[in-house]
Length: 535
Image 1 (cartoon, rainbow, N blue to C red):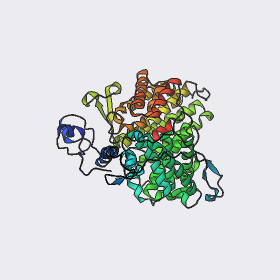
Image 2 (cartoon, one colour; image 1 turned 90 degrees about the vertical axis):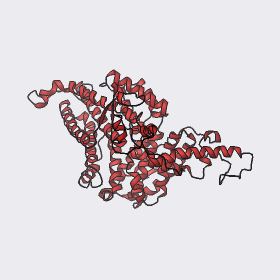
Image 3 (spheres, one colour; image 1 turned 135 degrees about the horizontal axis):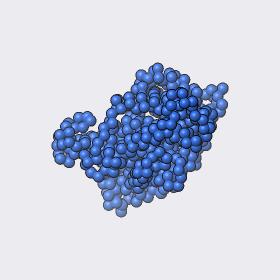
Image 4 (spheres, rainbow, N blue to C red; image 1 turned 180 degrees about the vertical axis):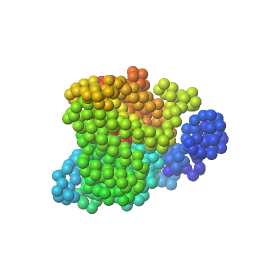
């Protein structure tokens, strides 16, 4: 539901001063002349959707209240109103998310049972529908799907979807799989818990339809099937509660691994297939690294093929995948190698990651600002703020920095003889032996620098963001890691905890509130936290 006028796409300072904005990148001319940071331009389509839907919905609700004395079938503004029925009971969890042996007779039967993460059942009376979405002729599914594509996707791992979704043929399980997380996101943005039962219902139906697709050798390898599994994993990441192991999310990630292998090299023939491969592989390798298990050998062969045929994406995505793969395998082999070999492999991987960050800095430079140059009240660490060319690039920077921080922590733990590796040192005459006394101290310095760079970018995703309730989600994992890191200075830990508390209280991010309890009660990151980075 949009409004027929043309809202201004100009930046906020130009709108406030009623000045003509020229929409130049990275900053408009008016802001450059005024020596202030241009906050960016508004998306006119999503603006019309967000603002005018609310206004029209409220108008319809007021009209409905005035006509409440009439018959239930009386007309309101050209629409016929029908008495609301109570919310349907949410179906029980589906425990048959299986890969049928018919796809490959030689395959061992794999069974995935993602848990249906349920919130409390919510009644749907009129009082809980302040925007009157249920009274509109347009369906909540359509509103949520449009919101997903135009407000959420561009700064998320699904950044490729708005452009390529139209290339897919219609599939019922894909439509339901998209509606489920979209409704959750819309529910959180509008503070409408009444949309959650519908989201859970769509999730169960999508899971059922996806099972049916997986039982067919032809349907299992389609793009729509893999995309449905990725969307189902997003739903699990969004609604996950309780600080237990993310069984549902892990199950969908395992399903992605099986599908990538079944799809083989043909998935790289199309742009959508290439992007979904990069997306799914990031989930798989992050899960493997977090649980210290080796990545599937079959995926290594696909990675090499993707590197040769990276005609739909940049080489940086392939390099990040290679670094993640090496990190997962290194963590998995930690108990089987000596300290010297482990440290040598970490330093080698760290050099590779440093080269990748240098190349990313050239392709997508980070701009460092002083807090005094920014309008409004901004909570910045050490009065320093960094801004990025886009929200997606900010996510990529933090992903690599967080991975590098894990490297430093593993290195520091190994050299402190607190890991599961026997204490042995390399010979002094070797290059590693000469550097050995300074390695731990250098790791501490480098870790602090990495932590500072993560914290400098926090305001970009909160105060300087047009949609902080969406962009701030990817901060939960980095902030939680810093809050419990032994390499983080105390001021950095306190800042990270305060920002987590702010995210939980201000934007209602339940995972941020639970993270505060986690860092207050223990000294280690629990294994449920990392899916929040992919939501």
